[in-house]
Image (cartoon, rainbow, N blue to C red; front, side, top):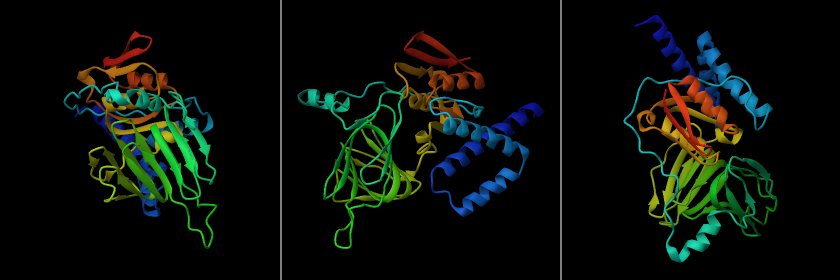
Length: 326
């Protein structure tokens, strides 16, 4: 093997590992054993320390300068290619005609208590002390009453960190904390979690503790999802509980952390933070990417891709960008 090729492979592996460690730390469920293992990995070589500094550079810049990217970007390349993926659809299927007006207005967030624009993330403090982060292009209603603490997520994604119910007393139990979507009800059991819905399905990722999910299809058979796990459900039912995605919680800090993520999937996530069409050529759709990419500056995120990978960006119009082989 060519020495330079071997060195490149080592660097890519170190960066991939650093991105994975970063995501696990950011998840909030990073225990003492994991911290010891991370420290051992960090001290094993200078290459590991350099890779970690790149990740920390992205994190520090996002923490210190919201809305901007400063510092180095994480680079990672995989030589493996997958079979070309189908380009993701831009628009969801239309609702039945009889419901179109109502559902369209609801999906657009008209009249929502809390909402964000495309490319915007906003934190909120709820009346009970719970904290809420709204992701890009999201809308929800807050319905707290003496019986329950309810959020109705119309569209988009939220991260919730629940607080102890301030109305609870020795004689009055805690009101349940619930998140409702078109597909079911999620009950937080003292936890931190994310909920995402796009009209076709809902996905829940649990960062701390446990969430109980009762899908509309089978409300009598709720499913418990523990920390580090996620599950998706829709009108037909609920899927299998699986390990949470690497970037399940990092978006709240303004960073999309990818570990061997297909380019098509990465671009689909970045596209949520910008207007217009962003897609890639089928020939590079399966390129596996590891790295940390800023969500508050999508132009910089795309430049990181084209600077690091054998890719180039083609702007067909101001609002139509395609990533093609370099």
